[in-house]
Structures are given as structure tokens and as C-alpha cells.
Length: 338
Image 1 (cartoon, one colour):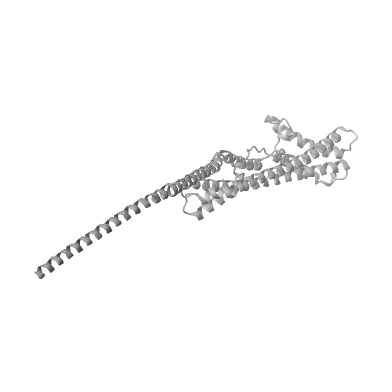
Image 2 (image 1 turned 180 degrees about the vertical axis):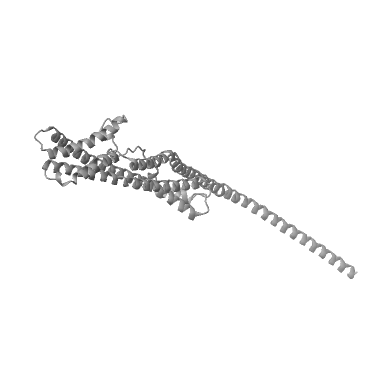
């Protein structure tokens, strides 16, 4: 009896313990669930804060920065393309005038060499102008043709750019030197013409005086009559050809061969040295000779202008090569421009 009572009591105790464990487990589970729900409720506003107040404004800011950067890059690339097009187009548009200038320089050089007139050889030319290129700063040109050109060989690009600028500068300076040399040539030619005209007029006056004045002694008359015959013979030659309107039209080489040289031989005769009028005429004939020799010396300008033409032609060719090089390369894309 007592044994059965003990068993009954043990069973009740086990049942009570089991129930207590179940209650504790349920309570714990309930508390954990409540805690998770509370954590979830607490984290939801925090995530909304990060997305709405931080991430979206930052995203908008960075998009704005990127748009602004792209806008500046596009604008700079357009500016660089404009400068590149301006310089290359200006040089290409100057090709005709530059070629004409060099050709006219060659023609002028030949004209000087063949000139047989007291008048200086005519020079008709045009103007070389690179003012628009000179207005662009070297920094902008470097930015366009070296830093932001789509060429991988920066050494060659730099060489080409400086060569292009050097040729532009040389062509302008050399054209000014050519004009200055031309002015010197014209001034010297005018001096020779003045000397020739002064001596020629004096000779004509002496000849007229000696041949018309009956008081002049025979020795003087004879000398000046021979000079007059030389002139008449020379004039007759060109009148027969129908080419004489003025003594200027007689080639100087004919003046020298048919008048000055025979007159100098005549002057070497000592019998004509005694009279003052003869001596004055002889002096003027020598002046004609000097003027003719100076005129022949002026033909050295032909070589000067020929050398200048060669330099201009070589510089022009170098310039065209540089422009062709840059025309083959574009400005970098917007993401590579610096």
C-alpha cells in the first residue's frame, strides 16, 4: 500500500515538472518572438532614414557632378576641335596665295637676270598673312596639338607642332625680308638710272655745243662728231626695226657694245685730251660706263631672290607636311581630354 502511494506521488511530480518546463519554454519562445518583432520594428525606420536622407541625395550629387564634368569635357573637346580646324584650314586656304607668292618670286629672279633696261625689273606679288594663327596663344596650340591629340607618339607630335609654328614664323619673316631687299634693289636701280641720265644728258649737251658752235676748234668738233655718229648709228638700227620710241628702249648691252666701248677707245687717243670740253665729255662717258657696270652688278640680286625663293619653297613644303600629319589625327574622346 505504501509502495503504491509512493509511485503515485512520483508520477505526479514528473507530470508537474513536465508542465513547468513546457510553461517555461512557451514563455521563453514568446519573449524571443516579441524581441524579434520589436527589433524588426525598430530597424525599419533606421533603414528608411539611410535610403531617403543619405543615399538618394548622395546619388543625386554624384550624378550632378558627372553631368557637369561631361558638359565641361564636351565643351573643351569642341573648343579644341575648333582651334585645330581653324589653324589647319587657315594654312590650307593660304596654299594658293603662298604658291603664287613663290612662283612670282621665281619670275622676278629671272626678270632681274634678263633685265636690259634702266628701269628696275617689275615685281608683282601678293601678301602672305598668318595673323589669325599668331593671335592664338602657344599654350592653347600645345593643348590642341600635343596634349589632347589622339597620337600615341608624343615626340613626333611635338616635333610636328613646333615645326609647323617655325615654318609659319619663317614664312612671315622671310616675306618681310624679301620686301626689304626688293626696296633696296629698287633704290639702287633708281640711283643708277639717275647717274646714267645725268651723264647722258651732259654728253648730248656737249655734242650739240661742239657740232653747232662754229667757234669750236676742229679737234673738239671731230671728237664730238664721231660720238654723234655712234649714237645715230645705234638709233638707226632700232628705228629700222620699228622698236624705238625712246632711248630707254635700247637694251643697255647694245648701248655698251655700240656706243660706250667705241667711245672709250676714242677717248684713249691722247690728241683729244687737250681741250677741256673733250675732257668733260670723256669724264661723262666713263660715268656711263660705270653706270652700266653697276647695272650689271645689280643682276646679283637675281641670285639673292632665287635663294630666298628656295628657302620659301622648302619652308612651305615642311609646313604642308606638318598640316597633313595633324589632319590624320583627331582630338581625343571626352573621357581622355585633360
